[in-house]
Amino acid sequence: MTEESLESTRTSNLVEKKHHKTTPSIIYCLGLALAGIVFGFDIGSIGMINFQTYRDQFGDILYPSGEKRINEVVLGLIVSGFSLGAAFGGLLLPRFADNYGKKPLILFSMFLYSLGSLTVCWAWEWWQVFLGRILNGAGVGCCGVVSVMLISELSPPDLKGPLVSSFQVFTTVGILFGAMVVYLCKNERSRWQYRISLVIQMNLAGIVAIVTAFVPESPVYLIKSRQYNKALRSIGRINGLSPTDHQVEAELNDLRERTQLESLNIAMSDPNSTSILKGEPRILFRTVIGTILMIFQQLTGINYFFFFGVAIFENAGVEDPFLTPVILGAVNLVFSFFSLWLVSQYPRRWLLISGSLLMMILIFMFSTCGVFFLNSSNGAVVGSIMILLTCFFIGAFACTWGPLSFVVLSELFPLRVRSKSMSIASAMNWTTTFALSLLSPLIIRHIGFWYGYVFAACLFLSAFFVFYYIPETKYDTIEQIDRYYESMTTFNEFSIGFPTKTFKKRNKKSSTIQQPEIQLHDV
Image 1 (tube, rainbow, N blue to C red):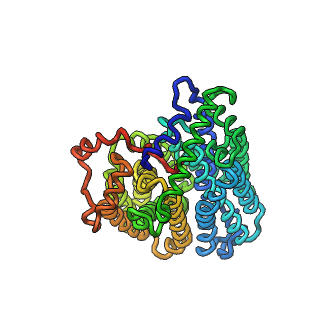
Image 2: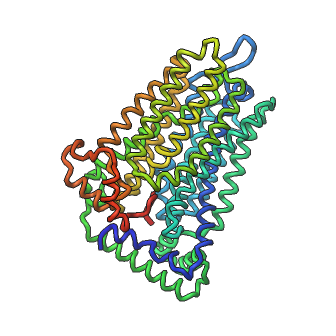
Image 3: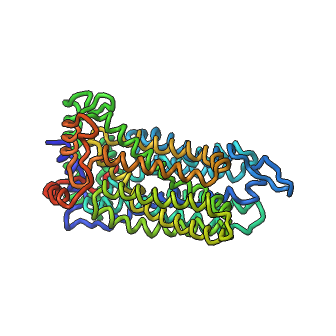
């Protein structure tokens, strides 16, 4: 049995038979995807750092007016602490899922997140905020990985892609929600101005924890830990059947056989087959490619707008800069729904390359407006044009690099190393976010809107990177991608140019055995 055929059968019987109810599993998956709101709300509510009450509490530079501001290094640490914690939480904590189960880990991650928000809420020094932000990030980083893994295991095979994608959709909902809360609190003058968002963060984490408590544990984990009675109940709940139903027992036996077969295959295989450094075909090289892909996702400049949008448009002379993140969040949400259709219709590489070039043009125009025209007599009009360009930029990202970088990453690796390779790439994604969040306030203060040209250059490089180094994964099986790497001797040899209709038709024959469209984690 090939690795791909084994992967395709691992969930083939779980929720696919016509007499089984798919509604319970869909509800469970959507409940788990609610964790995306916690992640999104944290991003959307970061604008609270621009509240004067926040600056007065944690600022250390005094204006002649008596108001305070936070110096750029401290501001960078406060914003980037979340990414630092997420890199740790996403890379290390999910490994405990094999020993303790996925549900307990999700509950623990929400506890960590709530503890972080509570720490920030009652902090009186900036370093306490930094510590709280690290705890926030560790909770979200862990929950983001484990929730998606559990969604992938509980979802019906034919709905796996949309249900996994629902986590990203809920994230965009959270971003909009967070921006709206910040906007509604802008006129509050007490210290509760920024604490309201923190209290909501804790409540959202509590809701996710309560919902998770009612979700069944992964049957695969229960079987591997020899908890067969609990596995029966879990399979029954997922399928809407009684645990004593003979179909549930049959599926339990089937899962046990396939789990044992997988363990046997691993035991008989080459010890290096699961190694990142020595695995073939070219696992180390593919991991590097995936890591660079995720680094470029952050170098698009998306968080330049989401993290520092209020400050950017405050400098642009926008009358109400707190309204801008609400507009950007709404645009992000709308285009995230549109991306579900776009990703299913068009080749991955074409969308990534097109997205890079389009975003490059948009952020180049944005920076040009800010550098050369903002201080002219038509400054108000220029500021409005910059908001419009940013909306187009957010929409382009939401349709291309936002979802597709994770989709392509999940399709680059064989099952045996996918989890490890993706964890490394995702950790570097968070590390890049940390570096940008830390340095951006200082860079913005010294070079202003010239900073956008840096991201424009990175977007130009990302288009070439995808063109030369990323294969088209939409129409090929993992075995075909393996063969690409086996026969590859140079990067140029690997390039297949821009996708064409001919290429699409040529590969449609193999699409019937293609792995699920969005398969972030094995089950």
